[in-house]
Length: 509
Image (cartoon, rainbow, N blue to C red; front, side, top):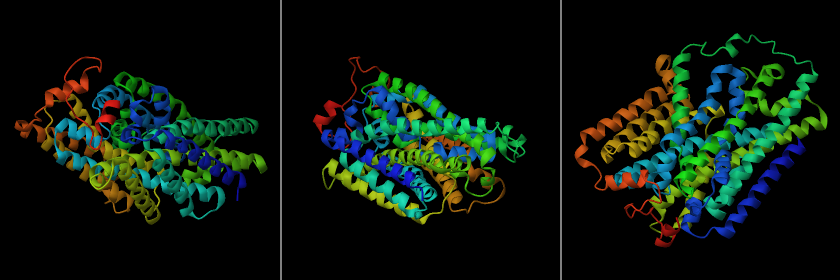
């Protein structure tokens, strides 16, 4: 057992709880719990978004995939970063101006339909579950690799720490935690990589003894053209549909702040994603035996032990383990807040107050996700997360883009598009996760469904709206003005208030 690694994981968990406890002192209103009262400045919000977005798949999974398949897998970090450019261009500022708390809030505001809201709520839970379960599984894998502990223990630790933080202060609390964890992850990955590169230079800069032509040259394998473009579409468009990412833009003070936040996030992600590629390249030299072993995700954690010995190896491994746990905690916190926000508004608030409902929903979400993580089989971290991106790109991306930029979108059309995109993409994901995907071309589509499901969702949503053009929302003109006019203009923005918000918190937001 690596005692240093165990101590580092415990230190990260305690620091997370300590920072999150501060949120208990400042979180009192519904707006505090759901959107941090919309007072988060761009710099802090960008750090929090980057901390939340950079899950363990962002470095453990990406490093493992690049180790295995080389240049083709560089589309993961490129796509996950470029997704914020799409979000900046099409979604960020109008979404903030909507005044919503959640994606279902936006659907109800734009389409004036409870049915659309209900379908959106179900999809929020579905996408977040697809994203949260691999976080808990990855935590178990990481703790087992570091200490030899039972695999269930890592997921249990993450679940308990996340739940305590979310119960303490909701969005206000985890904003501080996630901002701290971005910079912690960056340092804890950058410092070990510097030592590993120095050791590689000291060893005479050895190169991989493996054949590297296919690893360096993209799109060499079977179906590689389809798989690459489907991956690009999922990652570019999936970001704007991830509920735990979208909800953070509601915390900005105004539309311009949302744009500045997005630009800052692009810079933070661009710096971070240089690191897993470096670990993968070193893995080709020092850990080539992991290729084909099913343990490629562990390359980042095992490299220090292969390149150093003694205390140096233990300390570097401890840093990386702590960084991985920070990623699990940060991403899981955002997912739990997103699901708890939706469930509390749509299911539980009728029986109790909004804050109490939020806390009950958080407990239910964490318990169910932990049960699914323990019961389901492991998949490659990055690939599992990418499948969640495919579902998001096939559902909420069409809803947000068409809802913001096309006044002709109707509630029936939106529902048809959400159902078509959701059923097609979710079916492919489930078949892939339970290892029941068909062979041949359909199996390829199931492994990367976005190139089929995203156009299908857009077409279904557009066609459904054109066929029901007589059912345009009554106040669509006023809503479009609300989404696109600067906040300082004296125009009629309507009286929409997120479900569960009190007049006091609505005025504050």
